Length: 205
Image 1 (cartoon, rainbow, N blue to C red):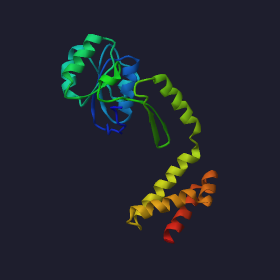
Image 2 (cartoon, rainbow, N blue to C red):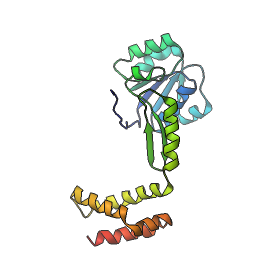
Image 3 (cartoon, rainbow, N blue to C red):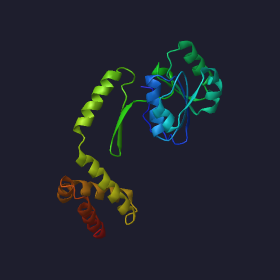
Image 4 (tube, helix red, strand yellow):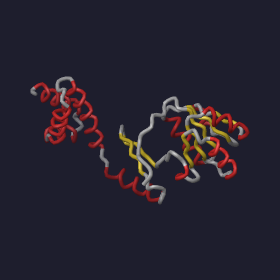
């Protein structure tokens, strides 16, 4: 596989999207929701995208839009125009919604549960199965899992104040995760009590 999974910081990233259809709009929403500056070239733009800050341009402006952008998304049914934009964007990062493996970046199916984001990529073999796997994963992640993440984050930050050794902190975090009393607090949604208990554990180190 030629692809490596990464998370890419998109705040203030300049994103040009060729197209304004369903796929283009999904891409625009995703990047806008994560702080990017988004400009699209096509026929029309939904009020929702306009309200989020997206701008609409004519397809006659594509050369200038490519020059402005850090990332180019090709999501148009016009094959000739898509190839033109891809060709002039060779020094940019390119996402090809039409032919994903031709681009530099894949935008996988993803979903969020609390502060957890999970992405699924089938190497372009089956978007349908990516959606099915998404449903399966969503069905097994519980609210307790999300609360455990909150507690682990809390404990990790507190431990950094008293333990400089990363391996020692990791060992304590495992002990906190496996602690039956903490598990009981989580099951009963007693998060303040769980944090107080963690504070006492850390003070005793």
